[in-house]
Image (tube, rainbow, N blue to C red; front, top):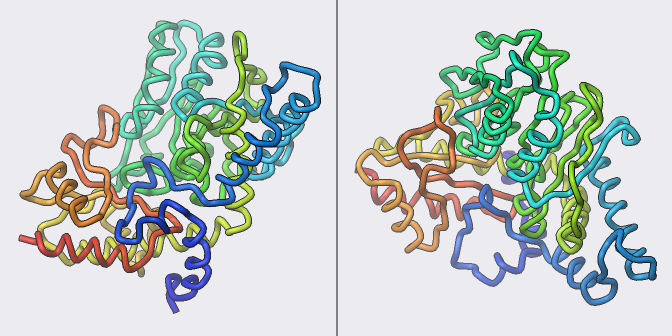
Length: 387
Protein backbone atom coordinates (compact mmCIF):
# COMPACT_ATOMS: atom_id res chain seq x y z
CA UNK A 1 0.00 0.00 0.00
CA UNK A 2 1.38 3.43 -0.93
CA UNK A 3 1.42 6.44 1.36
CA UNK A 4 -1.35 8.00 -0.72
CA UNK A 5 -3.55 4.94 -0.16
CA UNK A 6 -2.61 4.59 3.50
CA UNK A 7 -3.30 8.24 4.35
CA UNK A 8 -6.27 8.90 2.04
CA UNK A 9 -8.95 8.94 4.75
CA UNK A 10 -6.83 11.05 7.07
CA UNK A 11 -6.15 13.55 4.26
CA UNK A 12 -9.83 13.89 3.29
CA UNK A 13 -10.65 14.92 6.84
CA UNK A 14 -7.93 17.57 6.84
CA UNK A 15 -8.73 18.92 3.37
CA UNK A 16 -12.31 19.62 4.45
CA UNK A 17 -10.99 21.99 7.14
CA UNK A 18 -9.73 24.57 4.61
CA UNK A 19 -12.51 27.01 3.64
CA UNK A 20 -10.62 28.41 0.63
CA UNK A 21 -10.15 24.92 -0.76
CA UNK A 22 -13.71 23.80 -0.03
CA UNK A 23 -15.16 26.92 -1.67
CA UNK A 24 -13.24 26.34 -4.91
CA UNK A 25 -13.58 22.64 -5.78
CA UNK A 26 -12.68 23.22 -9.44
CA UNK A 27 -9.41 24.96 -8.61
CA UNK A 28 -6.17 23.16 -7.73
CA UNK A 29 -4.05 25.44 -5.57
CA UNK A 30 -0.45 24.40 -6.27
CA UNK A 31 1.50 27.36 -4.88
CA UNK A 32 1.88 26.61 -1.17
CA UNK A 33 5.60 27.45 -1.21
CA UNK A 34 4.49 31.05 -1.82
CA UNK A 35 1.80 30.95 0.88
CA UNK A 36 -0.31 28.23 2.39
CA UNK A 37 -4.07 28.15 2.76
CA UNK A 38 -5.45 28.43 6.30
CA UNK A 39 -7.48 25.82 8.22
CA UNK A 40 -10.71 26.88 9.92
CA UNK A 41 -9.16 26.37 13.36
CA UNK A 42 -6.59 29.09 12.68
CA UNK A 43 -9.22 31.49 11.35
CA UNK A 44 -11.45 30.78 14.35
CA UNK A 45 -8.60 31.44 16.80
CA UNK A 46 -7.94 34.85 15.24
CA UNK A 47 -11.62 35.88 15.12
CA UNK A 48 -12.12 34.75 18.72
CA UNK A 49 -9.11 36.74 19.86
CA UNK A 50 -10.10 39.87 17.94
CA UNK A 51 -13.68 39.75 19.24
CA UNK A 52 -13.08 38.71 22.86
CA UNK A 53 -9.60 39.80 23.91
CA UNK A 54 -7.95 42.19 21.45
CA UNK A 55 -5.42 44.52 23.07
CA UNK A 56 -1.81 45.53 22.66
CA UNK A 57 0.87 43.44 24.33
CA UNK A 58 3.39 44.67 26.93
CA UNK A 59 1.80 48.12 26.85
CA UNK A 60 -0.95 48.15 29.50
CA UNK A 61 -1.90 46.76 32.92
CA UNK A 62 -5.63 46.16 32.41
CA UNK A 63 -6.94 42.58 31.98
CA UNK A 64 -7.23 42.52 28.18
CA UNK A 65 -3.66 43.75 27.77
CA UNK A 66 -2.35 41.35 30.40
CA UNK A 67 -4.07 38.41 28.71
CA UNK A 68 -2.61 39.39 25.34
CA UNK A 69 0.86 39.75 26.83
CA UNK A 70 0.54 36.31 28.40
CA UNK A 71 -0.61 34.79 25.11
CA UNK A 72 2.40 36.20 23.28
CA UNK A 73 4.71 34.63 25.89
CA UNK A 74 2.80 31.36 25.59
CA UNK A 75 3.31 31.48 21.82
CA UNK A 76 7.07 31.78 22.38
CA UNK A 77 7.00 28.70 24.58
CA UNK A 78 4.79 26.93 22.03
CA UNK A 79 7.37 27.57 19.31
CA UNK A 80 10.16 26.18 21.47
CA UNK A 81 8.17 22.98 21.98
CA UNK A 82 7.30 22.78 18.28
CA UNK A 83 11.01 22.89 17.43
CA UNK A 84 11.98 20.38 20.10
CA UNK A 85 14.11 22.94 21.93
CA UNK A 86 16.18 20.90 24.43
CA UNK A 87 17.05 23.92 26.59
CA UNK A 88 14.22 26.49 26.33
CA UNK A 89 15.59 28.60 29.17
CA UNK A 90 18.71 29.23 27.08
CA UNK A 91 16.99 30.26 23.84
CA UNK A 92 15.42 33.45 22.53
CA UNK A 93 12.30 33.81 20.39
CA UNK A 94 11.58 37.05 18.53
CA UNK A 95 8.45 37.43 16.44
CA UNK A 96 9.00 39.19 13.13
CA UNK A 97 7.06 39.87 9.93
CA UNK A 98 8.57 36.90 8.09
CA UNK A 99 11.76 35.14 7.04
CA UNK A 100 13.24 38.10 5.18
CA UNK A 101 12.97 40.45 8.13
CA UNK A 102 14.16 37.71 10.47
CA UNK A 103 17.29 36.89 8.48
CA UNK A 104 18.08 40.57 8.14
CA UNK A 105 17.65 41.04 11.89
CA UNK A 106 20.11 38.22 12.67
CA UNK A 107 22.61 39.68 10.18
CA UNK A 108 22.23 43.27 11.33
CA UNK A 109 21.51 42.99 15.07
CA UNK A 110 23.59 39.95 16.05
CA UNK A 111 26.30 39.32 13.49
CA UNK A 112 27.30 42.80 12.31
CA UNK A 113 28.51 44.12 15.71
CA UNK A 114 30.88 41.13 15.97
CA UNK A 115 32.51 41.43 12.54
CA UNK A 116 36.09 42.58 12.23
CA UNK A 117 38.50 43.09 9.35
CA UNK A 118 39.54 39.70 7.94
CA UNK A 119 36.34 37.88 8.92
CA UNK A 120 34.17 36.04 6.37
CA UNK A 121 30.63 34.75 5.94
CA UNK A 122 29.59 31.68 3.93
CA UNK A 123 26.43 32.31 1.90
CA UNK A 124 24.33 30.05 -0.40
CA UNK A 125 23.99 32.07 -3.61
CA UNK A 126 21.72 29.58 -5.39
CA UNK A 127 19.12 29.66 -2.63
CA UNK A 128 16.43 32.30 -2.04
CA UNK A 129 17.62 35.89 -2.16
CA UNK A 130 16.28 36.37 1.37
CA UNK A 131 19.07 34.09 2.60
CA UNK A 132 21.86 35.77 0.67
CA UNK A 133 21.23 39.50 0.42
CA UNK A 134 21.00 40.26 4.20
CA UNK A 135 24.40 38.65 4.74
CA UNK A 136 25.91 40.51 1.81
CA UNK A 137 24.53 43.75 3.22
CA UNK A 138 26.08 43.06 6.62
CA UNK A 139 29.42 42.11 5.08
CA UNK A 140 29.44 45.25 2.94
CA UNK A 141 28.80 47.43 5.99
CA UNK A 142 31.60 45.68 7.87
CA UNK A 143 34.00 45.64 4.92
CA UNK A 144 34.58 41.89 5.08
CA UNK A 145 34.41 39.12 2.49
CA UNK A 146 31.53 36.86 1.55
CA UNK A 147 32.33 33.39 0.27
CA UNK A 148 29.87 31.23 -1.66
CA UNK A 149 28.84 27.82 -0.37
CA UNK A 150 29.60 25.39 -3.23
CA UNK A 151 26.95 23.11 -4.75
CA UNK A 152 27.27 19.68 -6.31
CA UNK A 153 25.63 18.35 -9.47
CA UNK A 154 22.47 17.42 -7.54
CA UNK A 155 22.13 21.03 -6.28
CA UNK A 156 22.98 19.96 -2.74
CA UNK A 157 25.63 21.74 -0.67
CA UNK A 158 28.96 20.23 -1.70
CA UNK A 159 30.40 19.51 1.72
CA UNK A 160 33.48 17.92 0.12
CA UNK A 161 34.55 21.27 -1.32
CA UNK A 162 33.39 23.44 1.56
CA UNK A 163 36.12 24.81 3.80
CA UNK A 164 36.00 27.02 6.85
CA UNK A 165 38.73 29.08 8.48
CA UNK A 166 39.28 30.47 11.98
CA UNK A 167 37.78 33.72 10.66
CA UNK A 168 34.51 32.19 9.44
CA UNK A 169 31.88 33.95 11.55
CA UNK A 170 28.61 32.62 10.12
CA UNK A 171 27.20 30.01 7.75
CA UNK A 172 23.85 30.84 6.20
CA UNK A 173 22.01 27.69 5.18
CA UNK A 174 18.63 26.59 3.85
CA UNK A 175 16.72 23.64 5.25
CA UNK A 176 14.51 22.78 2.24
CA UNK A 177 15.30 24.41 -1.11
CA UNK A 178 12.50 26.58 -2.45
CA UNK A 179 13.10 25.57 -6.10
CA UNK A 180 14.32 21.96 -5.94
CA UNK A 181 12.39 20.88 -2.84
CA UNK A 182 15.37 19.00 -1.46
CA UNK A 183 16.67 18.78 2.08
CA UNK A 184 20.03 20.57 1.97
CA UNK A 185 21.63 18.23 4.56
CA UNK A 186 22.66 20.91 7.02
CA UNK A 187 24.09 18.25 9.34
CA UNK A 188 27.00 17.95 6.90
CA UNK A 189 27.80 21.64 7.35
CA UNK A 190 27.77 21.23 11.11
CA UNK A 191 30.19 18.31 10.88
CA UNK A 192 32.62 20.50 8.92
CA UNK A 193 32.22 23.58 11.12
CA UNK A 194 31.40 22.47 14.69
CA UNK A 195 32.20 25.85 16.20
CA UNK A 196 30.69 28.17 13.58
CA UNK A 197 27.17 29.57 14.06
CA UNK A 198 24.66 28.37 11.46
CA UNK A 199 21.55 30.37 10.65
CA UNK A 200 18.87 28.17 9.10
CA UNK A 201 16.29 29.51 6.65
CA UNK A 202 13.36 27.20 7.44
CA UNK A 203 10.77 28.99 5.26
CA UNK A 204 10.03 25.82 3.26
CA UNK A 205 10.39 23.29 6.08
CA UNK A 206 8.58 24.84 9.04
CA UNK A 207 5.06 23.43 8.98
CA UNK A 208 5.94 20.93 6.24
CA UNK A 209 8.28 18.47 7.93
CA UNK A 210 9.26 17.81 11.56
CA UNK A 211 12.09 20.05 12.75
CA UNK A 212 14.33 19.14 15.68
CA UNK A 213 16.80 21.84 16.63
CA UNK A 214 18.47 19.30 18.93
CA UNK A 215 19.29 17.10 15.94
CA UNK A 216 20.12 19.92 13.51
CA UNK A 217 22.37 21.69 16.05
CA UNK A 218 21.89 25.06 14.37
CA UNK A 219 22.05 28.39 16.16
CA UNK A 220 19.18 30.23 14.50
CA UNK A 221 15.96 29.07 12.85
CA UNK A 222 14.05 31.70 10.88
CA UNK A 223 10.74 31.21 9.08
CA UNK A 224 7.57 32.86 7.78
CA UNK A 225 4.27 31.92 9.38
CA UNK A 226 2.18 32.47 6.28
CA UNK A 227 3.80 29.47 4.60
CA UNK A 228 2.83 27.33 7.61
CA UNK A 229 -0.95 27.86 7.90
CA UNK A 230 -0.70 31.15 9.85
CA UNK A 231 -1.62 34.68 8.73
CA UNK A 232 0.62 36.85 6.55
CA UNK A 233 2.95 39.29 8.25
CA UNK A 234 4.22 37.00 10.98
CA UNK A 235 7.21 34.77 11.51
CA UNK A 236 9.91 34.19 14.09
CA UNK A 237 13.58 33.94 14.94
CA UNK A 238 14.53 31.13 17.29
CA UNK A 239 18.06 31.59 18.65
CA UNK A 240 19.96 28.99 20.66
CA UNK A 241 22.45 31.42 22.27
CA UNK A 242 25.35 28.91 22.43
CA UNK A 243 27.94 29.97 19.85
CA UNK A 244 28.62 33.63 20.42
CA UNK A 245 26.71 36.18 22.49
CA UNK A 246 23.02 35.79 23.28
CA UNK A 247 20.71 37.10 20.59
CA UNK A 248 18.85 40.26 21.55
CA UNK A 249 16.82 42.40 19.13
CA UNK A 250 18.40 45.82 18.69
CA UNK A 251 16.56 49.11 19.01
CA UNK A 252 13.04 49.94 20.09
CA UNK A 253 10.57 47.06 19.86
CA UNK A 254 7.24 48.26 18.49
CA UNK A 255 3.79 46.80 18.91
CA UNK A 256 3.71 43.11 17.97
CA UNK A 257 1.43 41.63 15.33
CA UNK A 258 -0.78 40.11 18.01
CA UNK A 259 -3.36 38.54 15.70
CA UNK A 260 -0.59 37.10 13.54
CA UNK A 261 1.15 35.58 16.55
CA UNK A 262 -2.17 34.14 17.78
CA UNK A 263 -2.63 32.59 14.34
CA UNK A 264 0.88 31.10 14.44
CA UNK A 265 0.25 29.46 17.81
CA UNK A 266 -3.04 28.04 16.48
CA UNK A 267 -1.28 26.82 13.33
CA UNK A 268 1.31 24.95 15.38
CA UNK A 269 -1.48 23.33 17.40
CA UNK A 270 -3.23 22.30 14.17
CA UNK A 271 -0.05 20.96 12.57
CA UNK A 272 0.86 18.94 15.64
CA UNK A 273 -2.64 17.48 15.81
CA UNK A 274 -2.53 16.61 12.11
CA UNK A 275 0.93 15.07 12.45
CA UNK A 276 3.90 16.61 10.68
CA UNK A 277 5.34 13.20 9.92
CA UNK A 278 2.18 12.25 8.03
CA UNK A 279 2.05 15.65 6.29
CA UNK A 280 5.62 15.10 5.12
CA UNK A 281 4.80 11.59 3.86
CA UNK A 282 1.75 12.86 1.96
CA UNK A 283 3.60 15.75 0.33
CA UNK A 284 6.53 13.56 -0.66
CA UNK A 285 4.20 10.97 -2.19
CA UNK A 286 2.39 13.63 -4.21
CA UNK A 287 5.76 14.92 -5.41
CA UNK A 288 6.79 11.43 -6.52
CA UNK A 289 3.51 11.03 -8.41
CA UNK A 290 4.21 14.29 -10.23
CA UNK A 291 7.90 13.67 -10.99
CA UNK A 292 7.25 10.13 -12.21
CA UNK A 293 4.61 11.47 -14.58
CA UNK A 294 6.83 14.29 -15.82
CA UNK A 295 9.77 11.94 -16.40
CA UNK A 296 7.68 10.15 -19.06
CA UNK A 297 7.11 13.38 -21.03
CA UNK A 298 10.08 14.28 -23.28
CA UNK A 299 9.05 17.93 -23.59
CA UNK A 300 9.70 18.62 -19.89
CA UNK A 301 12.85 19.01 -17.82
CA UNK A 302 12.52 18.59 -14.06
CA UNK A 303 15.03 20.76 -12.21
CA UNK A 304 17.19 19.51 -9.37
CA UNK A 305 18.51 16.06 -8.59
CA UNK A 306 17.56 13.68 -11.39
CA UNK A 307 18.04 10.65 -9.12
CA UNK A 308 15.09 11.64 -6.91
CA UNK A 309 12.32 11.42 -9.50
CA UNK A 310 10.88 7.99 -8.70
CA UNK A 311 9.34 6.22 -5.71
CA UNK A 312 12.18 3.69 -5.53
CA UNK A 313 14.90 6.35 -5.51
CA UNK A 314 17.65 5.76 -2.96
CA UNK A 315 18.18 9.50 -2.47
CA UNK A 316 15.97 11.70 -0.35
CA UNK A 317 12.64 12.59 -1.93
CA UNK A 318 11.55 16.13 -2.62
CA UNK A 319 9.45 17.77 0.07
CA UNK A 320 6.40 18.69 -1.96
CA UNK A 321 8.16 21.07 -4.38
CA UNK A 322 8.67 20.15 -8.05
CA UNK A 323 10.01 22.68 -10.55
CA UNK A 324 10.24 22.13 -14.30
CA UNK A 325 10.45 23.71 -17.73
CA UNK A 326 8.97 22.95 -21.13
CA UNK A 327 11.59 22.73 -23.88
CA UNK A 328 9.76 25.09 -26.23
CA UNK A 329 6.94 26.85 -24.33
CA UNK A 330 8.05 29.68 -22.07
CA UNK A 331 7.34 29.17 -18.39
CA UNK A 332 5.23 32.30 -18.03
CA UNK A 333 3.07 31.20 -20.96
CA UNK A 334 2.82 27.74 -19.47
CA UNK A 335 1.68 29.25 -16.19
CA UNK A 336 -1.11 31.16 -17.93
CA UNK A 337 -2.21 28.03 -19.80
CA UNK A 338 -2.40 26.02 -16.59
CA UNK A 339 -4.27 28.81 -14.78
CA UNK A 340 -6.92 28.74 -17.50
CA UNK A 341 -7.49 25.08 -16.50
CA UNK A 342 -7.81 26.02 -12.83
CA UNK A 343 -4.26 24.85 -12.01
CA UNK A 344 -2.56 27.59 -9.98
CA UNK A 345 1.24 27.34 -10.13
CA UNK A 346 4.19 29.74 -9.79
CA UNK A 347 5.91 30.66 -13.04
CA UNK A 348 8.95 32.98 -12.80
CA UNK A 349 12.51 32.96 -11.43
CA UNK A 350 11.36 32.21 -7.84
CA UNK A 351 13.61 34.89 -6.30
CA UNK A 352 16.63 32.61 -6.64
CA UNK A 353 20.09 34.02 -6.00
CA UNK A 354 22.83 34.92 -8.44
CA UNK A 355 24.17 31.36 -8.82
CA UNK A 356 20.72 29.87 -9.34
CA UNK A 357 18.74 29.07 -12.46
CA UNK A 358 19.01 31.69 -15.21
CA UNK A 359 15.74 30.85 -16.96
CA UNK A 360 12.20 31.07 -15.57
CA UNK A 361 10.48 27.83 -14.64
CA UNK A 362 7.19 26.48 -13.34
CA UNK A 363 7.09 25.54 -9.67
CA UNK A 364 4.43 23.23 -8.26
CA UNK A 365 4.35 23.25 -4.46
CA UNK A 366 2.05 20.83 -2.70
CA UNK A 367 0.56 20.63 0.74
CA UNK A 368 -1.73 18.42 2.77
CA UNK A 369 -4.90 19.79 1.15
CA UNK A 370 -3.75 18.70 -2.32
CA UNK A 371 -4.89 15.38 -3.76
CA UNK A 372 -3.62 12.74 -6.18
CA UNK A 373 -6.49 13.70 -8.48
CA UNK A 374 -5.18 17.27 -8.66
CA UNK A 375 -1.72 16.00 -9.56
CA UNK A 376 -3.28 13.82 -12.25
CA UNK A 377 -5.22 16.83 -13.57
CA UNK A 378 -1.97 18.73 -13.84
CA UNK A 379 -0.21 15.85 -15.61
CA UNK A 380 -3.09 15.49 -18.05
CA UNK A 381 -2.95 19.21 -18.88
CA UNK A 382 0.82 19.04 -19.33
CA UNK A 383 0.55 15.94 -21.51
CA UNK A 384 -1.51 17.89 -24.01
CA UNK A 385 1.55 20.10 -24.51
CA UNK A 386 4.08 17.25 -24.62
CA UNK A 387 5.57 18.00 -28.04
